Image (cartoon, rainbow, N blue to C red; front, side, top):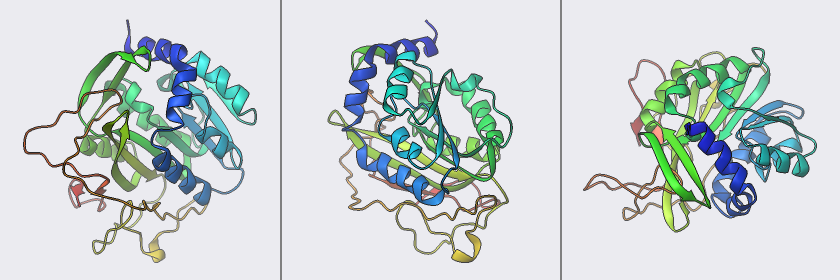
Length: 290
């Protein structure tokens, strides 16, 4: 069976169970990035949500302020989303097959969804996202943090499931090559069913090139931009990364790069919770761990 069929049929089978499970997992993390979009985008902004699931809680929150188009490959998820968020528009589709006119959206989100797409298609998908964004538009996504071409689990919340992704550095390179300027890149770790799971959260922007981050004090998700250079084109969004309160570091935890996977990492590795990846603009080389 094709990986996308596994994902589609899996979410059709576990739609209600996944909705209940997700309501208690990565709550603070998801709320922080949603709040960032609610703060930075103007009322009535057009937002595309890739992997909208059953519409709760993210789609409903975004739809209270914005014109939201939600996309999901699962017909069951789309049905639930239409019931829960009647104000939004929903499309059942493979996100890699979508067609929108250039400059259609003020923001595109992909919370934990691109890792269900075979990674060979990620570069083309990111390029499409960049085309769909208006100048100054924002891209906020939780991407994989570790390298895995094809990951399968026979029973994830009651159904088979598939994951695929690149490591953090490669994901940042692909986002940049798509034509987006990375404002923040941060590995976020949270427990899922008693196991630590890590995603790379990217906030990026389309538009004129912004100045590099200050190399002095780095705090919160990433270093704040100097106010003199933080104005974005288009809708005038100003980037101020959402702070993570109560951040802690624990050298005992292990990273998992996808839901349901067993933790694995080379001997001697000491992963940290909430690791910030610094992006210093063009000509400085690749991203470096803080």
